[in-house]
Picture (spheres, rainbow, N blue to C red):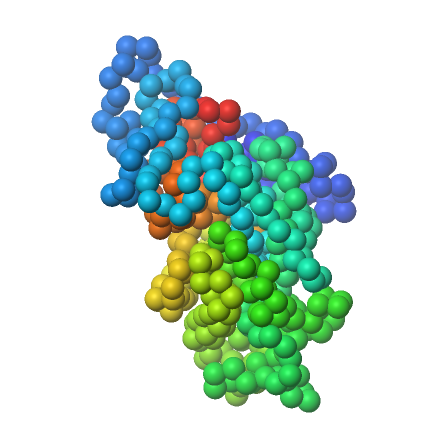
Length: 395
């Protein structure tokens, strides 16, 4: 399970020494006790609960279900297949990720790469021809399945502290002498860094050209945008937006504009590229979800989703988080841990399957499985959905 076995107690209580090699923070803690296993007599006839957990959402075009070898017949299907999708089962998939710090301090890009390979796809992640990209996280939690993707090179932009407008323009020609440019009715900073502080900018990478990004993505299967996580916080800073009252600024129109601007630039170069806009995840209260952030995050997600869902070949990816569950790191506070990585990946693959981009998808149960911990007893569909479990070697 992705659980206490994934993060030692010193991560939970904040006592790990961050100056140590990160490998010293990986360990095995007491795992949750599994639920009592069913007897062989019970296994012959699934219970009503098992039937519910094994229910998966399938598209109307579903042709067949794939089974992998397993001993418990109640596990159900691990994969789904459908006809009329863009990429056939076992076909070529190429992708790229544009993110803020969640691409630099989390492993979801790497896990996405490994999961698609494990599903039988031939995966490529091309390298950009200009600076700023990384092939691996700068810092990361060590997950139980780290060996599956630790050596996979997965180029991505993980620009710590950046907001969505750092990726939306071709150049900085319209920046004035004070370092601001017009955006909607505001003057917004041309400095791309945490809270628009030039001391925290990337040397040699003042911005990323939308036109060059779009050129890089030509011919790719899909691109994931998770580059707007910081927008709501940044607009409250006068260093980022010149305003008489920054507290009253709603970031949603700004995010919607800059995301749409980049998406349109991508589709000018190649209208066939699928663009996925990843939802903003909730705030953290230590290692759990901060309940007071949920209303605000839901409003932001709804606003951005409404803006992008009408763009061609563009889809919003919802990523629900369970409550009262350890979901956030202490290595890099505020960033989801291994469990969050897994939810990102499965939500992306579920969307690609639902939108008929991929012919083969993961069997996926509903929200009732998000916080299930009895991993050994769950069918594949519920195990995929749970933040605390994962499938390894077909079980």
